[in-house]
Length: 433
Image 1 (cartoon, helix red, strand yellow):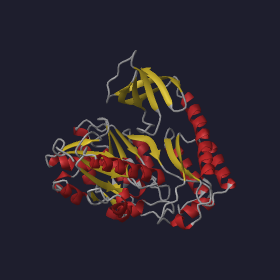
Image 2 (cartoon, helix red, strand yellow):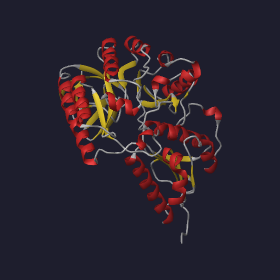
Image 3 (cartoon, helix red, strand yellow):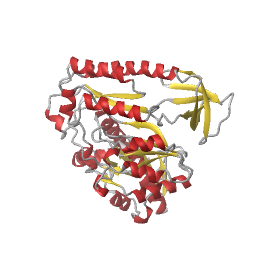
Image 4 (cartoon, helix red, strand yellow):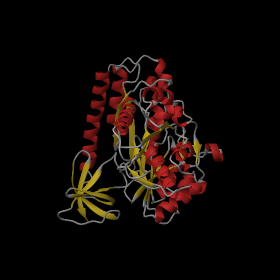
């Protein structure tokens, strides 16, 4: 039997999954702090809130394992309460309640007021844009929309996040101003689909107008675009990128595949020819732009020929940044009706081949940077290096610039001009210019 409770009601928020979950956790923590609750992110606490991911098999497994781990701690008397929120519990709440009943309560993705109530707090409407950021001080995510209206066959996000809902421009500008006042210099714009922004509120794609409003926020020096959808891309965004120094020459546009038959089955609403033209237009309009994409291999029905087409195309396009995932067969998606017919080892082998090609491309592109000077933001110090990024690199997923801390001093959170002295596949090495 337990004899005493732990330190009273310190709430530990544990975040799994993508940057959109990071953002949601930060909003939750901001609300809790405003309610005078003691709150921490991934530290010790006697009350635990796990913000889960339910996107693909690996992420679901990690979420379930984390829940089981904290339930065990609860049974051992090491924590008092365990609450679960986020995508996994939105998607599988009845199953989870049955399989892991020792969780105090499960909440979905839009249950914040109820979750706060369970934690003894009130939802404060006036806190729009108030968050307790968990990222390094110099950058923060800005979620400009929730949900998704796209019909992609492989994706369960609409099941977990609902329909697309844009946040009004004035709310986002106000949030950006608060972040800037706290020392944030770089905004990373996120949504399931940035390119759809504004259609629901303003009856037109309004990302360019949002960017023009955000660049006026004093203190914000970089604005980065993540998760743009290729179909119906608003080309006026490129004009803003080209003409506005604060908007990074960078875009993350998940393309998923390039074989026409696979694109059709994936319900992506585009073709190889259209996609290639779009990327060529990107590079023509913004010549020194870094394009990041993600691809899926092993989708149902992907033949050797489909994979060959993808491989050739990756070699031709020479993406600055690329990630590759193996297909995950997700129930209640359109593709779940198809036979998951590519063996797991073939999926993995194909992913490895794509990443090997990309590694070589990345190495070659990085070699070209030796001798050049780039404006970098310094994120942190790790071991004997300060770690920074160029405008062509997003945190956690892209290249980093390493500066020898035994020879040079740079201030974390500052912009510094760094001359590149050496380069590997995914790292640049440099010194203050």
